[in-house]
Image (tube, rainbow over all chains, first blue to last red; front, side):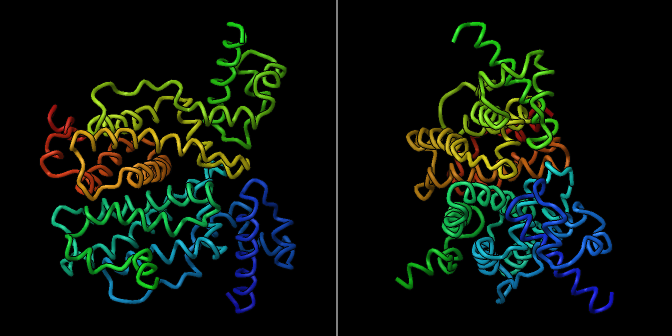
Length: 204
Length: 204
């Protein structure tokens, strides 16, 4: 695509994310999306074909604006990543809209499972690195844990959104890790791990 | 309410559950619900006021047709309960519709968090019983684990529904427990626990 076409697509994707984030799939209209983007409906048809196409793009590209924490691959980076995502869920519209659509996609008959597999693989890579660094208990199954993490994160996000509009999401993710870590890593590894909760305590 | 009014309400609730389970909130119409119930729209207005009222009732009463496993309160019953729910999610329309609406409720602006608290409390009671029976590790936090269980179950259900229309939900719940149990109970307690997976192995 030419530079200008790439920019137009970006503008549309982000306008769609804003509208989906605010009102969900059903109530989002192509008119409201193109109005927000300052473009015409023709641009949607050219780049995404339909509202459904826009929704699929927002689901698939939900992580496009993320800048994952640096640092050595392994357990600490996995935890840093989930802490970072909890904050991003409060302010990153593309991520938030993509997650919302992935959760509520039955309403639109989208059948998009691949994004859950993508996150599972992302988490699994860190667990595989953690294994290579000797950070995991022999009993811990990297693939099963990666899948559980995606499930637990998805459900935690839904509960946090309903109870506090995600204000308590970082705290819930810390609580999740306090539950999970003893099944994943030996005590001496856990002692060296910093979670956002322990970081907050250390600063206090 | 009189007997007949109670029955009418039951028939409507179940017809609504069928329709919500099949097409979701947005595409469900009061007409399709009353047609299925063999009643008139007046019955909906009398008992539930609106489609929104019907949806709230289906969410709140999602567990009405469940018959939870008997047995002593504690870790085994908690696991039996989650195995039972995995099978019920495949065949219990009221449960399935209630869970679907609870997950997709943003599309209808329902803000119903109480059902998640209800499940959390239900799971917590078993963990408190498990604690009293000496089944839990000192480090395990009953409330945090109960909340994580509801979150993990919710997310697992979404992923199973998208990937296999819930055919693999029992297997996913067994995998969840294999991940979680080492953080919850000491090895000698875990050895005495039967999950649906170990039960299947024992039968094989």
